[in-house]
Image 1 (tube, one colour):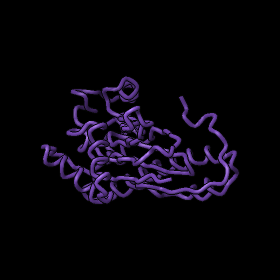
Image 2 (spheres, one colour):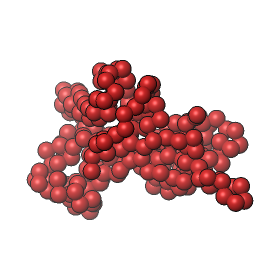
Image 3 (tube, helix red, strand yellow):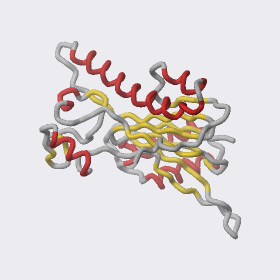
Image 4 (cartoon, helix red, strand yellow):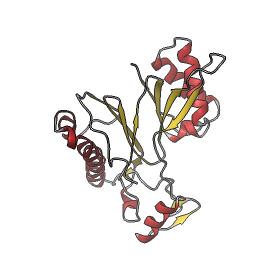
Length: 238
């Protein structure tokens, strides 16, 4: 399903990038014809990921020896009260939304997934890899790469690994508090619900988001995560 079909027409717009800000389409998205804005946003995000991948692969192939590195990516774009998320690989974005107050007056957090993980064990991903002549062994592309979409990883691009992001959107409300963007290192030791509740407990203590980020990443390391842990918190205010 194309999440950009039949989007409501926005009125006066304002926009803000988080994490990735590359390419020339954003100005058009904000100031252009409102009827075409959502199509332009989609093109902006798709072009940004494609151009980033192409430029990195060009740089990587020019090195001696050639770089074989790669990266996942998650991008958040907020336009008025709509958040657009583009991601590839296994980094994730989750939203903290507070429920309406219960009879006892308590409000509980609800965790909303804003991204989709891409790994070779997912049927559609595995089929694409196999059609390209690649194989999936032990849940990895050619038995090595854990993700089925990435920036870079040039040696796997001929095997069906692509840089096309998954695109999603969500309308923000006055009940929304923050978005967590994090790599898989965090989610190896935290569930999405746990991460949201951990941050919420810190912000209720009036801890600044930067400090909450550091504590969340530090707690992941304390829990035994041996992988990289990168965390970004995006505050949502009305």
